[in-house]
Image (cartoon, rainbow, N blue to C red):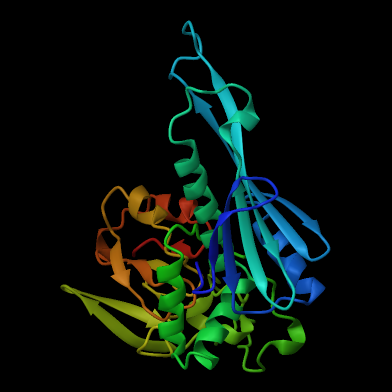
Length: 309
């Protein structure tokens, strides 16, 4: 995300190419700063010093595919993004001269790749950490956008982001809403992990703990739903009687679509949902062969397959 106030150019002390992204938000609470580090530590190489968080991505360049071939060379390269917090938030990265890495004159497109990887890291950090909440708050309060418009704005500004489940700090128990059901399943997004998606796995007893809600028809098939609150897709609940998916846990990664041997799922737009703006819907639910492949590959464990009687 590049703010209108962003500066690009050459850092005068080092002569390295520099990218600076200045965000119109504040991040001064030590716990919030630490949450940026902790949220990304399983994705990038992270360091944290006082008011600064460092994120490093490493990759390997090779001059040919076969390591056993004559003349084979390789070099390990990296780019580091620095999040500087305080009264404003600056995200900085520097692309070092290729000479820093010895004599890899054969490396092609180094700066372009480093720029791309740095942007990917920045997009991922902005989309998955507490910075996302602060940017959306900025858009809704200062820019007078709706929450849906603010979310779309952030998504458009972070096209290279990787979606990282559970990357934001958990809501404290005292802040959770009081309308949690008897089974302990929160009914609204405010009581979930603030990354957006409700934490998994799916509660297999949802049929007895959630109220049946409006069904959804797709083609010739009508999908039963439980706990569906809104028509604007903010709280979707659990869909499917036999191929059951808690859409508020689902992060829309598509692993189930790839895994299903009989094409039960297809993409379905869900704008406004906290977990993701599209889901794999069980459009051909009756075709399920109970292989459990989708259930096994779902990262947040949002799927439960029941054998049809």
